[in-house]
Image 1: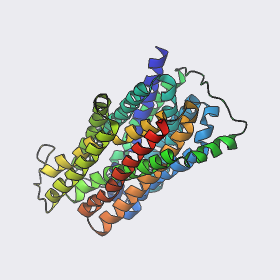
Image 2: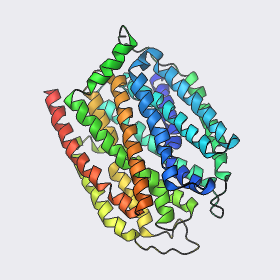
Image 3: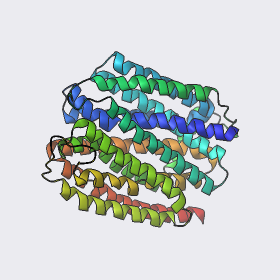
Image 4: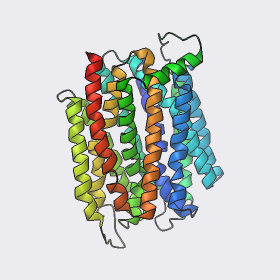
Length: 408
């Protein structure tokens, strides 16, 4: 029962952050209209989210076992609750930047704590991979629900309206409930040895990168998140400006991307029982490339009626987001591969590296996509993802090679 309660607390914590972290695409679309700013200016929101994730993870991930994973999550959730309350109370683009800065810094605490806790409540590599996929799948359910929650507060007849900010009252309430659940849940005392000085923990984390397996992994994580955030953060704007859909409908249709990611990650837990992770990822990467090449031509010179609805949007609006189905297993699988290859004492430090390079990849992907979108067009921006996709195919092969060498 205690283990089940811990898992529930981890799931709800991840659910709350899923909504906030992946609202960047929706918020980019809204602040462009509400605060009348450019695409280049709006693209920095991804950086305000991801750079704090990278910095905080880099500095304190190895030290978190000293603080305690539960305490770290309590701090993160408390800060996010306050940041959500500030959004409707002090409406401004600066407040939006501060929100994502707070969410990013808090998520660094939360993700390292959640990932490290998985190693405590699971006993085998298979159980670890299964729970990690389930938690990441539940994360995507949070992302999916977030699109619809935000869309419910948007006014398609007045895109410049600030009414969408009222959603943050609801999010603050959800964060407060999460805080109560964490406070009432007892986490086990971790049987992890403590180093003599915090600096030793930090240096040990840095030394992990010198391992060939870890180095190949962080490159793979960087490339994957670059692709995912480049597409996910700009898909609502793509739907709005390229497919000529209203802002509310653009956000609602982006939920197909989140739903695909959720379904793909939940299904991966079953598929991985019968298929090698390496071949699964190769199939997924090939399908991603095929979908990009086949569906983006359908987005050229799209014409829609004035009364376009959820069920009468252009075909490409339904097809392209399905890329999430094939993208879904990649991130949790490579994370599980690297964590399963390391002793549990190093999971917090390794998760810190995961978060750092994921954050850097997300920022790079969003900024590059935003720049290409603004200076060329949306199709070119999404075609550009084929380059990191090809590099990811290569790095996954190297990851498999290094994991075999480590196991032998």
